[in-house]
Image (tube, rainbow, N blue to C red; front, side):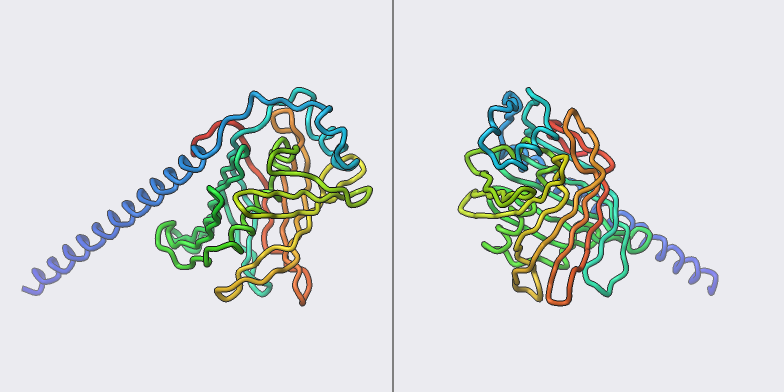
Length: 288
């Protein structure tokens, strides 16, 4: 009798474990399907503009450091980038007292209309992870943290502050696809001094500004901006800084392969992300 009870318990444990594994796999499949749909929707909102080409005539009236940047980063006749996808590795932390955690991410961009989806994954334990999803699509921003990529455990309040913050992120990451920084019906440049200039974007009723700093060669090496930061379910504006390095060629364009991002608050600089790009592809509008 005792042997029979032990056998029943073992069978019950196996059944529960099997159900848990199936549920786990279903959740992973669901999360992948949802992300694929979001990426497909993002790409569908923006037209292919690769027939457009860069000419030095386009930049002759721009601030001098911006002219130097495009001369450095683009070749005459370079086709405009319409869609971007990349993979990165790196480190991430949420606050000054937190230790650095390894992170892997994918990001997808559109350029004819500004848009992006970033998916960053941090492993906590084997088979247990959290995912950050940062998004700007059709003029609206979203930032969520999900357990196992599907269970929402944090959702930043939506509204004009988040929309501006996410549009600003798109602008700050545009050096990864330089043709998006050429003047357009929603982007313009203003002079500041001999080694910096301000990029201003007005899109879908939202305005964002980023001050880019250039070195003597023409590379964008730093950006600064006043960006909304979510703190305790509300927003505060803080100084936002980015550093770009390790420039190398990507499909005839010079781009930074390392990006480091910080907040500057009353207690000083707080670096929270260090990303190094592992792969970047242009005009292949499908999910990895």
